[in-house]
Image (cartoon, rainbow, N blue to C red):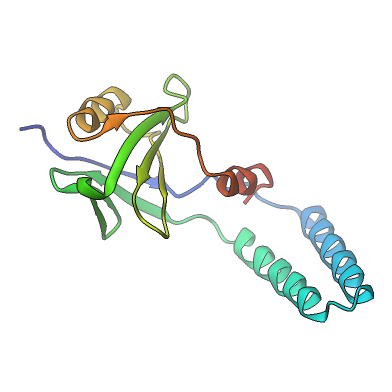
Length: 153
């Protein structure tokens, strides 16, 4: 029986944002809110301002370190267990790079994909372990997550 694989990693890579980034966010948010007000869509203008404020707050905080584990019962992210019965397939992206990523397709409404960085763990061991429980398919990171990473969140 293979042993569990446990590792810690940050939930995403953090880039420090300078004052220019926050100024650009503010200018885009205020301009968009003004356009929404010109079209008499006050609720949308409020949503833009609140969303920009939330983005500024969240982007200034460093990412949390999470504990990931592959166990006989399922995949654990911190204290949340995703049993193998809820999981469909897995894929390891950028296997040969410095920052490989594990993507798991889950049958869960709120988290359709689990995305886990594999920087500090043996990628081949993870592949072998998951092959015993799940099928391997070509999966992509969710579009929202790729966009957030692209804009430095």
